[in-house]
Image (cartoon, rainbow, N blue to C red):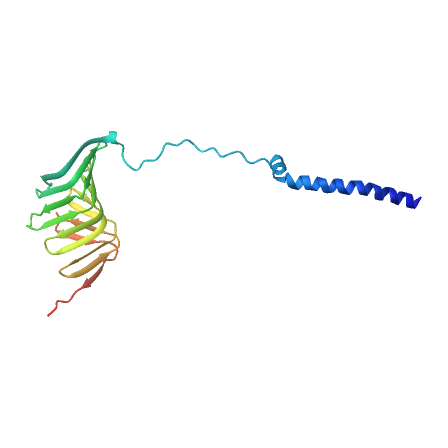
Length: 204
């Protein structure tokens, strides 16, 4: 009896083992499809249909364009100034963009201050000019300063900036981390952020 039972088990295993082997081969061959069926991919993320961001102002907002700009005027202290630029573009919101602007201010003391930059934005309502990139300020007393951004307030005849500024003059070289302020109708300049002054000795 025992031998007959063992023989029956062996005969069953002869059929079961090949069937299991074939089943494993089928599972391995079709596993990617079976995996996707068991675990379907997550639904695609919905991206909002946002309008493209434009860094340039639309042409519809341009009111006027001009080249070789030259403008003469006086500030509230009756100090005459001349503003020139290679190109100017006026926009509806009340701003004028200037390319390579230069402002020459003649002080009541007889001295003069000049400001040049790569670009400027004139805010007509506030009467302020923002000078941008490679801003250079020169004074007829022999001083020359360079910074990356500065503001001109035409109502108070002042200029100021909060970017680091460096320069040189009759007394030596100067560097200030937090900018400058030009006041007293252009006669006085102050430096912010613990300025450093390097005094140069006169050569014999």
